[in-house]
Length: 217
Image (cartoon, rainbow, N blue to C red):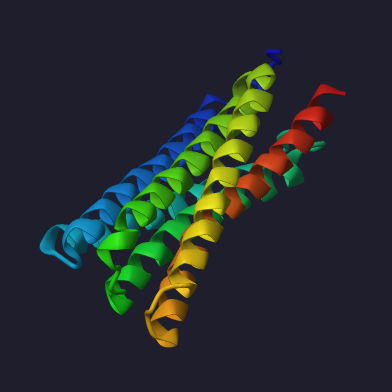
C-alpha cells in the first residue's frame, strides 16, 4: 500500500533519512566483517581498522540523526506522526551503538573462543546482522511502501528467533564443558552481547508494525 510521502515533498529530509539508514546498514557490514576477522585471527591489524571504521560510521549516523531531528522539530512536518518517527529514528540508532559496543568489547577483552565454538559464534553474528538488516529494510518501507513492512518484520522475527536458539544452545554447551567458571561466564556474556543486537532490532520491528497500522487507519 503506497501512500503519499510523509514529508509532503520535502526531498532533502527524505534523502537524509535514506542516507541515515545507509549508515546503519554500513555499520552492520563492518560489524559482520570484524566478527569474521576476529574469529579467524583474533585482534589483527585488519580487525583494528574495522573497529576504527565502525566508530566513524556510528558518528556519521549520529550526525545525520541530529540533523533529521532538528529539521523535524523546527519545521511543521507530519505533526500527527512526528513524535513516533523521531522515536523510531532514535531507537534505530541503538543498533549502531550496539554494533560499536560489540566490536569494542571484543577488541578490549579479547575473549578466547575455543575452536569448538567459533562456527557457532560466526553463525550468531550472521543471524544478528541479518535481523538488523531486515529491520532497516522494514524501516525504509515504512516511508515508501507500507505493504512491504509486514513481510520484512516477519523476517526480523524469524532471524531474531534463530539468534536466540543459537545463543541458548551454545550457552548450554559452554556451561556443560570443562572450561573454568570464569571463562564460561566470559564467553556467554559475549553471546548475550551479540544477541542483544537482534533483540533491539526485533523491538524496532514491533514498533514499526504498530506505526504501520496507525498510519493506515
